[in-house]
Image (cartoon, rainbow, N blue to C red; front, side, top):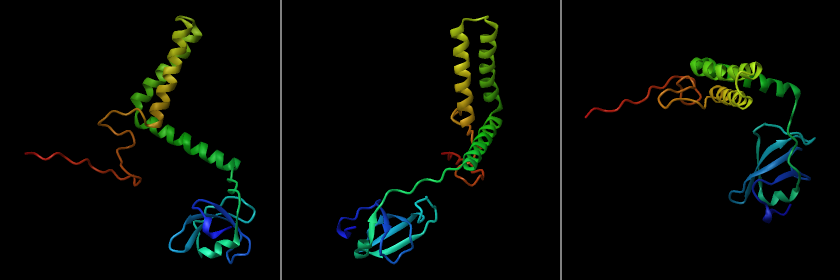
Length: 170
């Protein structure tokens, strides 16, 4: 690679440089140096090591451009993600039981109306769609009132309750 045309966010692989084998991403070019982030192993699979390597800018001649590494995808990772997604959805429904019950009632009413044929099919379908939409909004935490916080009243990721500032009296 030509050190003069090096661009940030390029993927590089060492050919004769004194760095370990792998796929690197160029993340900085400060003051005649180059900062590289290790993003893939020697086989081209993605890694999340956080390892940074600093080389001189002329040392970029010992690298060649390469394709981004392949992401790691596994069945166990997908199952773990699904488990935690369902768990977070259920916890959010439990935090707002009245809204969750109302949304579930709309959904059940739509299915019951469809089965019983007591109402027109379009109305039953509308109830099912509205119930499913309401349930997804409540479960994702997007259906909250202005004063009440659906996410357990916390701000930030600490899980610690932070009181709201009170207005000063004149």
